[in-house]
Length: 346
Image 1: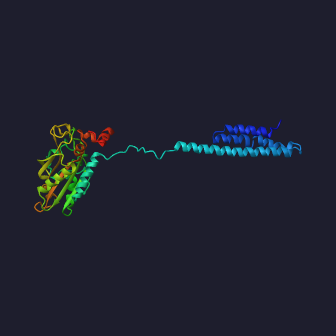
Image 2: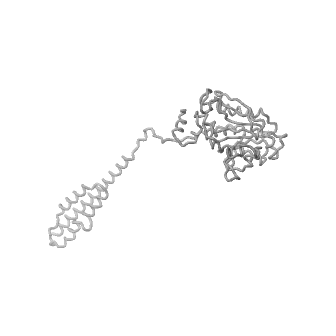
Image 3: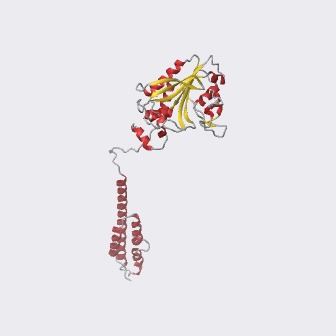
């Protein structure tokens, strides 16, 4: 069998090396042309069958061919590796001088924004934030707040009972009852914020779950003037002078006297719409002087201390601030609504 010449081995190797495009191709070229079973290795092993005079020249020619193969193989490997790096850099390259494309960012919920504005205002007035449970005992939700057993608010029509003994709180005034029970030192200035639940019909301005923000101020010598001034300050800080407010008499079991504050509808400006039920006014908070019976319940002498209490419908306030007629839209997971609110669209 004829032994392949060094030049033929080299030509075959170069042809295969030229066709190599990937690291796997190079592995195959190395195996076929430089490996243990390659024609080159076979030719080197067959040198012993040559005549002694022919061996040196044949060995020199084969070794030169092997050296060239190894050099060219290494050069090809470096070339393919460099080309792979260049391709990766080209694919991953970014022009850092171009303006960035920021991903769409979220925003704080309108109710959260309203709560934060209220809390910032009340902290300036010396109030601190307290919290309480949403699953509450009837004592704190009703009894301690001068709401008798026969009061309609205890009926299933208005209250979500959990197991007959506990309920979902129907107002955040429960937190104030818990604060008064601890009898902290005077003056007491606290606010509470959170979800409340009422089993009532859902319409444009009412929900079965909504948010409230309530506060109490207890001290010696407080009068109705302190209450009215505080409420006027809250309304003015939230809405400025572009919206009118009005006070009207109200009834709440835990305050006496009681007052409500209406805001000229921020959605329609007065003529009437779904947000204000056509009245042109929206009730944004209820307040009053803390009832003497509530003070006596917690061991305070109503002849020595007085207090003001106020409750703000945060959900309704937020709806008025962003100009929507259906408060339910604030709680629906429709991003189109929240994007429109963020853009300031009605």
